[in-house]
Image 1 (cartoon, rainbow, N blue to C red):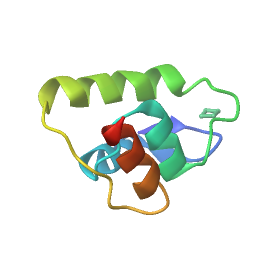
Image 2 (image 1 turned 90 degrees about the horizontal axis):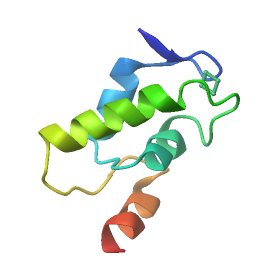
Image 3 (image 1 turned 120 degrees about the vertical axis):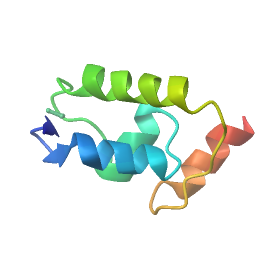
Image 4 (image 1 turned 90 degrees about the vertical axis):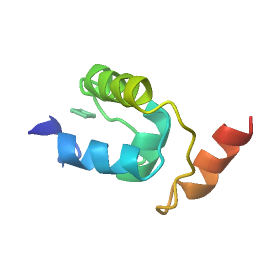
Length: 77
Ligand code: FES
């Protein structure tokens, strides 16, 4: 199902980003689309991030480009 119509990414794309190590809404957008445009999808992405956090308490580092460095900075903070 499409989550973001502005950038054309799906719930599967968000899950892959989360499974790849993205740990925040900002990291998901950096990975998939740089930044939100209209922002209507942000609550859905936030919900998916929170669900992922609840089900996966372990840490992680995003190895996917281009957000890998940003995700590492988030986990180091
Ligand atoms: S629907 Fe995602 S930025 Fe507009």
